[in-house]
Length: 311
Image 1 (cartoon, one colour):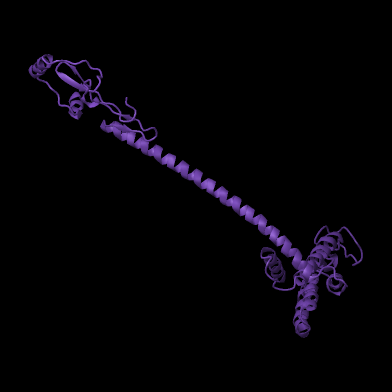
Image 2 (cartoon, one colour):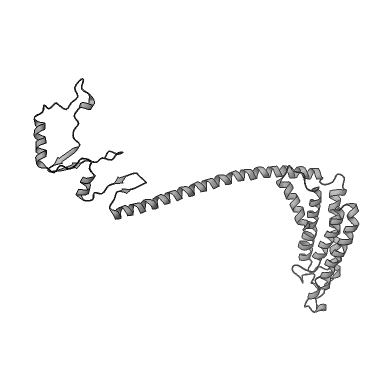
């Protein structure tokens, strides 16, 4: 829990560089550095994995199959996570020493009264269950306390200190502003990528719906024998039904009477025909236009042209 609080304080300062830190930054740096270097690196990575001392429950005296090894003798009877030194004892010493050094002087006695029994319980528990020898626990207390005192001297006792609160504040402010610029650029790129993906998705969805609608409409038109509309190219394909339906769609009525048709031709022949060309002074609208209807026998067929293409 203490380590989580320290990491949170540093992250808040890094993400909000313009704000004052929640506590002096040397305190979380001191706690994290002593925890990582003491119980983490020195005890678990260096001593426990390389000393080779078997645990008490694994030696022959307490019913195991390995010989007892003195505390100062390096052996190969244990490959990793051995007895020397105690990790729980190291963590207990870090909890007592590091916290006591940082609390105010008025709270120091009360902190010791609470933390010392807690550390003793954690350490004695491992000894009682055969996890460590008493010498492992005592030496773990010693090496951890020496490391904590050394780091405390570098950060607080030395003149000038290795790093001050002001220097840490400035460093985290500079790095935090640089991190903000990087995050802003990443956010802009992310928004652009999302817009591109959204446009591509909408375009694909629209094309798919148009294609499905066109196919459905075309199938319906084929089934009913009607005009089929293709939305992709705007072409209208008209299929002729019966000859009677096509004649009914024409605007000019069909003249099936041959006698009336012959009388109209005789009346036109008696008139003075003028050449179908433009004469000076003649209105363009008064010119005779060629008939748009073609007569073949008794029926009249109307030429239908497309309003846009003219075909």
